[in-house]
Every structure is written in structure tokens, then in C-alpha cells.
Length: 440
Image (cartoon, rainbow, N blue to C red; front, side, top):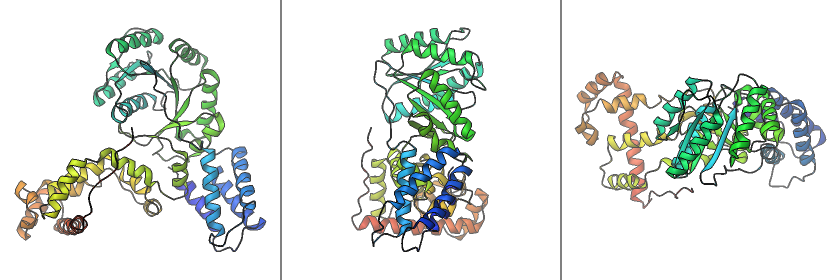
């Protein structure tokens, strides 16, 4: 998402590299370029100016110690100010109550209904909560159907009353049923409109006043730029929500909304949608987002994703097989499946410092592993379990069966052998495959 602004800020900071000190002249040039980068990212001029004024003031007020170059100090200052701009601290969702009620509002097309399902999946899988979804959009049968399909997909019940035009009654009935069934969290989806209008605002205000939810979240499409900020202000004035959800952060957006919505409405960004899959939802961490904007990666988030998909028992099993030289293509395929669960490959590479910049112009789709999977899928069970048996004639048959070239098969066989040797060397030296348990 932030590729454009990231490259421009990096270029602006480059002007300070090699300088012996920070001066009024070189800092003015750098700050001017940063301001232009923010404006290009659809950040409003007043906010861009205030931000760069603070950066300039901080830079001129600090002494450059001998071990740190001016450029490095400037990166630190910009990182600190970006983090402050986006909220400084991570703010979690409030799900206290019996049940806890979460009211979700937003414009039509913002990704509100999909977010409700993603949040339900997040609370179910990462917080071990029982969840009920409530179809409160009484005007669009398609919205009710969409929520029911998504609910079935993630194994979460959806409460709906077809033919009832009162969302308050539907929500109250759903909460009563949730209490009877001992459900922990009730998430109420609401109707959206193509634009902010009085009827919609009255309906949402009525829902909030009646239900008294523990958490009210406003969902906004980050691709709408400054309009997202304006809409967020309008909703906040009427329903005084607790937090913002930014959807479609994986899209081709300039990022202005993500940077300034916290500053503009004084409400924290709590979640960000990073893809279409039901597990593509993350807590918003201002400091980690600042890292990514400045091309510093986000290793912490990468490790957390790995922990979520990590199967320690399977890892121990693979380690034993490596030590005894029994690691095979079935194990390899199993590990690929775990990596794929972590999310989009380009997004994952962008979390590694330096790699995001190298891969920004490379198209890495969700089908990146398809050639490998098709080749392994064309092997017989015996070949998958006994890699050393794969000779020239077997390679020819595997290539024909998978629709890949013999060169691709040879390349995979070599990569597999290299990977096996490297992993075996690590394991034989006592490298125990362990990862810390993730926090709930």
C-alpha cells in the first residue's frame, strides 16, 4: 500500500546521507520533499505542514552524536513522528460483557459485512471466544445472504429475521438468544448507504442508544483517500464510535487515510484489513506501520503470523526426519501449506527489512507455489517419500504429468536437495525447532 510514499520519503531522507551535520539549509530541503510525499499520498495540507514542522523542530533541536549520521537521526525522528501521527499505541477491542456487543457501522461498499465475519473469525480463533453474527442490514437481502455464507465458512452462527424491517428488534432478539446459548460476543452488522444521510445516521444512533454496545467500530475503505477522513468525522459526530477499521490496505491506495484518520477524529485505528481471506485481519500497530512506511520491514508481525500457523508437533516430527535423512517431498508440501496460510507472499516479503523495496515491482501472486505443487502432485506416493529414486526417466514423466518443463523439475529437485542439506545441518548441530507460544 505504502510503496509510493515510502520511496518518496526515502528519497527525501537520502539528501541528508553523507552530511556531516544537520543545518537549516539541508533540513529545509529534506522537510520540503517529505511534505510533498505526504501531499501526494492524499494527506491534507494542514496536517502535512504540521507534521513536517514538528519533524524540522525536532531535527534542529537534537545534537548529532559522533556515532550517528544525520540521515540516521532523521529516519529516527520521522519514525517517531509518524508513530505519533497514527496513534502511538496499539488499542485493542473491548469485549467485556455477557455477551459483549460490538456494533459495526460504515458506508455501503466499505467492506463492513466482510469485516464483521473477519472479526468473528479473529475472536474465535485468536481469542477463543464464541461469537454470533447479526444480520442487521434489513434493506439488502444480498447483505444478509453474504453474512450467512461467510458465517458458514468460518463456523459462526448468523442470526437473521427475513421480512422484519426493524434492525433494533432483530438485534435485541439476537442478544437474548446469545444469552440463552452462553455466547461470548455478538457482532451486529448494520445497513450502509452510498453516502452519509440523515436516515442512516438516525438508525445507527438508535441502535447504539438501545443496545449500549461495549464497542462501536466504524469501517472505512482506505482507498477513498481524504473522503474517508471526512466520512469518519461525520459518523463520529453522530455515534461517537470507539475505534476505526481500515479495509483494503492491501490495495493500490495512497495511504493518506491510514496516516491521518487517527489525528483527524481523535479515535484509534483498531484493525486493518489486509486481504480477502477471512484470516486477513490484523490489529493496527502504529510503530510497525511506521517501520513499513520507512522501508524498515515488520519482523514482529511476520513472526506473529508464523506463530499462528506454527504446528510444534509437526515441526518436531520433521526435525527427527531431517536428522535421520528421511525428510521428503510430502514434508516439503506440508511446510508450503503452512507458509501459504500466513498470507500473501508479497506482503510477507515486505515485512522483511530490505526485501519490500526489492520486490515492489515484482508481481508475486497467491499462485506462486502452484508450479511446485503441480510437480510434486505428479509424483507417485513412492517418489514423494523416496526423493533419491527420482532419475531421468521419472523426471520426464513428472514433467509431462504436471505440465511443467524438465528444466523446472530439475530446478525443484536441486532446490529440494539444497534445502534438505541446509535444514539437516542446522538440526544436526542441535538447532531445536521451537517458537514461543503466541499471546492470547
